[in-house]
Length: 489
Image 1 (spheres, rainbow, N blue to C red):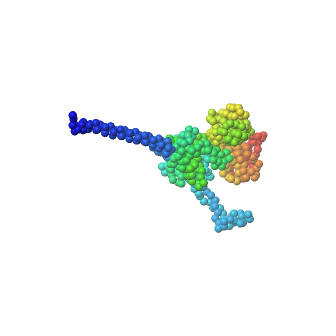
Image 2 (tube, helix red, strand yellow):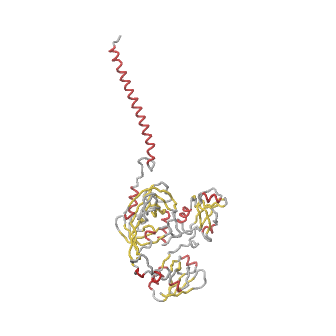
Image 3 (cartoon, rainbow, N blue to C red):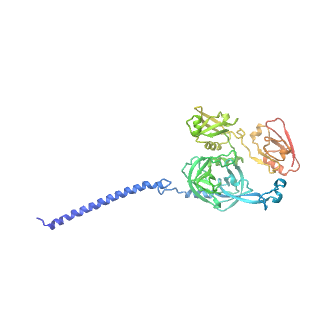
């Protein structure tokens, strides 16, 4: 019989083995529990990040590096008239005019600033029309500090876009992206010069597309803005909205704010419109605007209920312009536009933007709902005059006292009228010509003092140097015979 000492010694290995097994089990259970907790927090944490993956926010440094060298600072100088007087009002204005007690008007220079984007290495720069509108001279400062005077190539108030040109070469220019491919929620950068802080970059996301905020005052305004929450402030106007690849997707134009400073909402002109406008300004000096020729309304729930249709998206045609694109194609009041060139239409802003990207003579395919039937209608777009001819740039007489605006004629227009040269009188305002003649808009000036004229600039140049009597000879397209008008300079 073994002694108790021998029994105790024999039990030691078993005790050690049991302890090891117990510790192993504890650590195994603790490890499983830790893994479970880790997995739980990993599943919960991403909700704190806009990207949807913890620690995986987009790197926008490359986009900033690519875009900032192409964004310039735009300075515009204006001359304004002011009067100095110790009085707050002029009680003798009706009898003696403002000069009594108020003195003669004084001119002083004022400056406004904004941004612009270099689009070609030859120095073409796009900006907002409101940044340079009415300026006596425009100056741009490049990213590297070089400064150039800028010439205004052309403007388009309907989209608030203007094109400038500086005399320089090999400039850093931006690549064009696609505003069509831009998605709501996508990251974008706003690059500009807010509050004269050069080359400022802010980031945000695309909040919405095809926004019409009724901010442009032009009667033919085209608003289909990209809305973003990237911080945009005064001075950003005309600057770049770029995607994560550093490509231009819009021109920052407006903010929605009660204070005049950024309040969370900024708006940019889509680059697809920008490309069309600046190309037309480069080629023609004026935008070749196409018109569908309809008055339209949003198709929402209330309108759909009144019409008895089951659609709440689309564009309802209230009326068509006689002789316009829609009328000639067969569109009718009461039609509901549902698609255009295979793309579903949600609202009138989308339709306006799509038409704005086309030129007179282009054809589009529309799908309409008419009295319950779906029809396909092909529309040839026309300009505001109801033709597919290219519109020529209007030139305002430098002598305001004359009160007329002229525009060049295309070779096609001249050929139709059997003319070798001529310039059209676009508008007649209050002035010397209206006072001493009965010229009406549409008159074609074929010669000035018996010398043929070929362009509006030529007429302006001759009249600017002329003293004494002037004889205009020309025709009206809708009247027979020649007409002669005389007045004094």
